[in-house]
Image 1 (cartoon, rainbow, N blue to C red):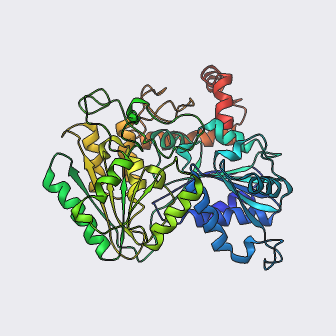
Image 2 (image 1 turned 45 degrees about the vertical axis):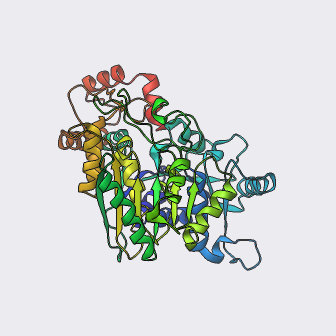
Image 3 (image 1 turned 90 degrees about the vertical axis):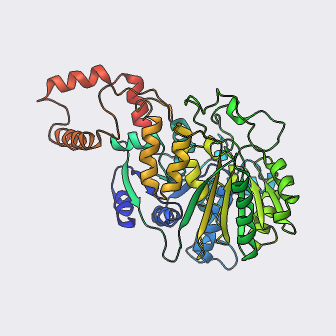
Length: 471
């Protein structure tokens, strides 16, 4: 894995690689090796993360892995070290100024940040590598905005635990070379997942009894809700997140299904603040400390809550999907997801990956109101059946279609493919890709293939060609 990336970075053309890996499989370590290779060559690396919680955790992890090598120019730092700068939208003026200066001067060889990295005020001395974590959270234009900050086209490494449909389609069609981490670190005991019918009081009661049992055994529990306040409009009425803010409070809803989608009169989504109050009054959880975490909290408060949860001061953490990616508390062994049928497969898999990260086995309980036979029920049942992220990506693709592989949409039903389907015809696509590569290698200008040349010019209009160049 590391050799593949290292070989790409040593070539004269920019790397375009997708790193797929199970939740907790070590993608960050692979990315760090790539970033250090670029830093050793005199360049800089930027790591783009979708939320402030994840960006801050990445920065802590990288500094811990590097030790004195992350303290270049500082007292106690290694002579040949560099710095890891963190840049997010909520930084104070002094911290932001320091991070911007470190990036612009080159003192920080690694710059970690959220969408704040895309600001026109952010400059790099010599940006050589862009790493995008959870790449499905970012559009092509956003990735392109960061890459444009380099003097020449930088290397690109995008990482994901469960590719969304369009990502799979673009990968199959050759947009990115792929690497896959299919194993998880040794010593983990795995995760068991069960679907809990929300309308079955006995099952719901048993859910909280299991939470109590896990906490009494010295572990921690997550409880995830789709929204913050009980009196705010359902996120379903807003649809998927758009724009450039942190996407930590809106699940990736699938609204197309009849008999279980947004058009049906359904119970309101559970909210963090109301669920936290209910749990504090639940006799099953009497005496336990229940904390709250969501995207509207100040960064300092988020950090304090996560620190309290990691230490055990907070035993049950009620949160939005701000904990979806990157949060690593090995003592957390149980996760309850309210309204699980209203989330997408990739998001549920990411959430589930927050537990079972230590030596104790994990338990994920998906509280669902989905009716049997609906796509929503299929999603949660699939999650309960397997923890294989690659199998889940395939099911997700079958449910959601590949989207417009030559457009900017990240997912959806629209597709420019008329005769092919990415899952069903994967072998045909792979063969066609190999044949196309052979033709281009032998005849780059299509001189001996005039019909092919005409077809390409007819199908690939300037707008689509520009998109593919940037993608």
